[in-house]
Picture (tube, rainbow, N blue to C red):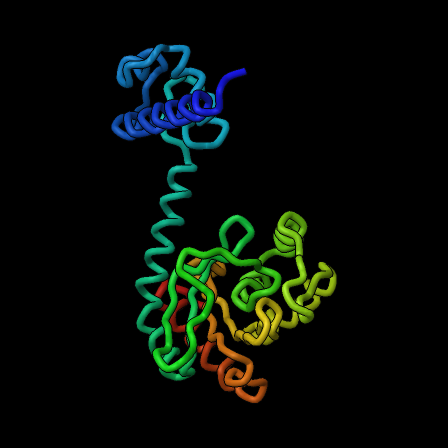
Length: 260
């Protein structure tokens, strides 16, 4: 049996070699054959061939059927676009998030959907309120958060069902929706009204009102929210907050080229 430390070392070595292959391929627009690439990265041809097979399966490289040369794959573009989108959304949204925080006098979040979970990519704290558990970079469930439901409501139903089945719908509070059919009905209502509410569904004592953000192609790419203690973010305040949050979401969307 191979010791754990040895296996970890082998994995790290393979990762370093794979990354080196990607870096080298990035310098050759027409691609490289296995022999040429092996020479460039100073590795045995069989090793390079094995690593290329794994990278090709994941979409990071692709092989030209005629020349048999390898080039960078579309997965690289996909990841780059996601990174650039996140950067662009944060940059364009920031002044509007600050304005929303001043209006609501509560913490404001900007989130995106990644691998079936919500990721907080920006946050504007209100100095006069208690600090929220949320942190930039932290992940959260989609089914029990306002920001999650604001995105789910505008995705194809098949994609929503797949996410909920894969991630599950654990009960976070007594108010959490844990049934897929009930959630689908709830999301249909959210889509009609244009905003969502976390009715103390994710964290006891915390209510959240959220709305989606669209990009230039009309795809929902993010959501924004106002969250705070239910004693301050009261049901009576929800209509006023929802209107402002929807307006803010549309302003950010327009900055990203969205035209309904």
